[in-house]
Length: 541
Ligand code: ADP
Image (cartoon, rainbow, N blue to C red; front, side):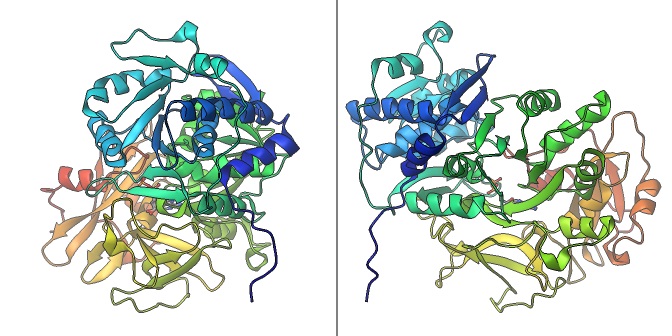
């Protein structure tokens, strides 16, 4: 027997309808690409996204079309997402940090027909437009006054909005309809497209907003530093309208000083970004002696959050750190490190131990760890294996069918991460499956070693890779960038690490470098490092 409740498809534009109706005056504040800080609110974003939707429909765009955005986090980018989704088309976020040729490849693979682009990124579009033959319109997210000279036929966004109107009814379609698209950065092989549905985005927004997750509400002032072009903006572009949360959009200003300025002047209470952004902010605070009186919580994810970052935020600035893990394929949230009663009341150091874990799954994410034969492993906080997940906001395939081997027949997705899970459900990533070091048949976690090394006061950033060893197959090499003005030694750093990890996990050597290569989403590029150190001879070899 079926229930007798109404059919009310979970469509993303309903989130914005709700925000406009119940929280219409709540502001969305942006550092604009033109320079000044601009202010709008959910009511105006709602109206203007209808203007855009009407224009798109009038220009022949329809259900299922892919429309790209190449833009920073701003109110206009929000309008673009909702205007696109509101006609049943698909927002496709492009990462400007990729090489132009990669962007062109992705656009062609997705078959993007139009692009909304920030002023800053017009040169990228100029460089690739010829290589993307399907592109029909290039809309620059600015006003007439700032329109750039170009060999391309560019449309001014503000003029388009002014000449259109809000007399538009959102399109109707089933909730399973595709809403958005985001490619993973493809550290191995070609990038792979993840195709979100309206249903998965709305469900994910509800999961993300929960108290033990992001705990959003209309009383919070949220700054999503994580870009809308990275992993679906961690769901914030949907979860904020769902809860009527004020948004402070940092635009392209990702450095410590710019981030601080907005945190301070806009009295941001809650923010989210990858660890490197927080390193920049914490350095800036230390140099200037400034404080964070308004900020209460920060979510750190995308890469393991070093203990030192958590300790500084919590001890020096009284800001609670929530460690989170996720991936593009999961919309992206997979786990968050809020404190359950089982871990309540611990002393500072023990709490920091818990916060090194990536946390527990919210409702809507099922997890398991398995060995290479797909046999489930125990949740004992020690045994590590392949982390697999499933849920309503987890991908069941990549767009175009690539990477099919990552999807089990029974709907589990192999994350490619290696993790253990403890008795209370707290998961800890120990590595990417392809980065883990296999020493004499046993696994060594590179992330644990990196976290430990960056706890040394003279280490700015650290990466650990496996280097060939005649007896053990592979042994760990620690690669460090010294902190500005410091000259750490190998003995000093190894001495600092000794006793804090199993003896056989200790790096066999330390190499100092000026730079560690990163991917377009801020992760250490281990493939590159392994190439650089391919001929490295360990002193123990
Ligand atoms: P990309 O590969 O494009 O950078 P993702 O952001 O989807 O895309 O990357 C997801 C991966 O990032 C995860 O599978 C995991 O390896 C890593 N990751 C994300 N958050 C964390 C975290 N808190 N700790 C350790 N690794 C993380």
